[in-house]
Image (cartoon, one colour):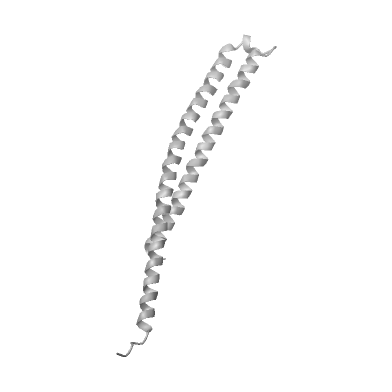
Length: 128
């Protein structure tokens, strides 16, 4: 392979790793948003449960629900940003993969042309 093909292959590996990183971060933010939503639901259930201390400390329950809801919105926003980054990384991976293919085909054509030239140069000249 040519130097260009090798470099492009390395760039492709790097771009794929970067895409996986963004996918992982998106999944992490989505999971954190789900956990925050579950926490808010649990606090609301505890607030409405019989024998809870909600009547004594209602502001604590309301603050915790507000905090969990805000955390959920924050994580969803971050997940959206990471989703956009995944889309950009996917586009870059596709472009680099296409360039790697083009470069490999060019290398193959050049190798075939060299082989043909060598084969022709080895043939004895025909007498006239």
